[in-house]
Image (cartoon, rainbow, N blue to C red; front, side, top):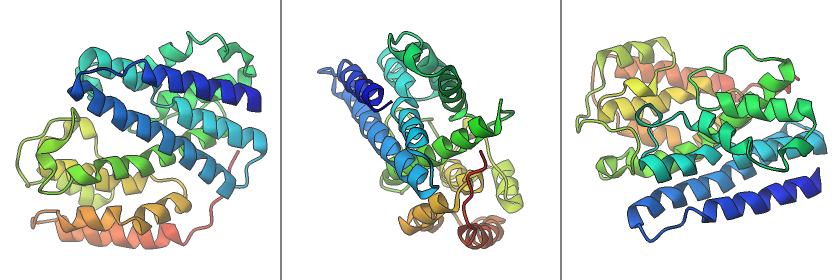
Length: 265
């Protein structure tokens, strides 16, 4: 497994570099995803070790991080956007890239199926039905690692000075107001569909609501420790329902962060 993993890293490094170009706009997006890939891979391993996974399962976690966004590079080179609704579902596109790899068949079928499932569901609003408890657990691990780093990626673009500079993410109108249906979701402590965001205020709130979709307390503690929650809350507009939503969120965070993580697989 370790030799196969090294081969996968070499391939992925070369694949990402194959999209390098003299086009500064394209390179901005490619560099963002190159760094994101490296960081999510490292977080997956860190979380796997925190959960006490075996060496084999830590390697699977590493593979998930390495390939989870492989579809982004082809997506951006073709469409020049990271907006799936305006191009293609990047997880589905990624699976088509992985299917082309000559060494993919060297993974055990159970492991390959698990990797495909976790990658297919990593960008969806919900994981949905899983083929096994093991596949579900790895999907949760990947989604947590991905979100933790996306908070870092988006942090500069969720402030007043950076709102208009987000590189080819979902577009939003220059309004700090939060759409009424997002306010109601915030009050209820639910999840919002990022594809429905319309304003800068919506963009902030959708990312804040990700807190309710974090599975492991370790991940949430990292999100809080790195200041991502406080930074977003600081820039939310003064609007009816916002304070109620913040109070609910903080209460949830306090309880969730005190939980002990378990690997249910």
